[in-house]
Length: 345
Image (cartoon, rainbow, N blue to C red):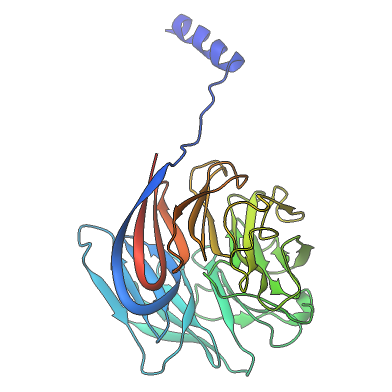
């Protein structure tokens, strides 16, 4: 047996096999939920897809054998949720506007607890994620001269707001966009937060929010509706940001950039190619960082070469956010619906 294995091992060492990432050629779409609702946040937990939207609605769609099972909970007070996250046990939804309300839901949505409230005329929370079962973070627009950032270290039972003394200062007219719950990204111990408006920058923490730095980007900036609307990282080094000019949705330059050094430097990519304004970008799982998708004003776009070139798979402009269930299945949501997307080779 040793004699038969040795030549093969030597061959593989000298001539390693190249494993190619799968390349998608098309998609099929199944509408799994329709309702008069605006959905900008999705999250998976166990066998359910959770969503949050306007009119105080949080719900789920079952993805197992009971695929027709759905549930929506509402509140007598009407808020709009644009932030949704799970720590593996509970589901958390955070509203925009004054007052900001952060609720912890049981996985069946039958139990609901208010775990954080903030009252301020400028309060506006944009996105929320968890590093692990105990530690999570939510990002909001400035009420002073820094981002509003709240962090939990006890599984979401309590949340504390960071002082502006430990955060980089924002420029006048710099804030965030609550477009798709993707302006904060977590990998390992790290966090990246993206901004827009008069400046389009990337704020970075290497230690779960204890210390922060800030990096410049070449994304279009300088007007209220310009900048970075969405970000994703494949690992702790490779990341992608997108956005553009919301008021010029077909403008497809200075609206997408890539980093290979953890966000320290960014390079514009696919200038005058592919999509214009984008509200959500995501790496395809298990693609070695080569495959990306984006949704926005021109529908769904796909790249198989790390963002160098793009194909348009859907023209539907009503999709705001997208998340992958596995390497070739994603769910996207937006105006009045959630769709399941199967990517075909």
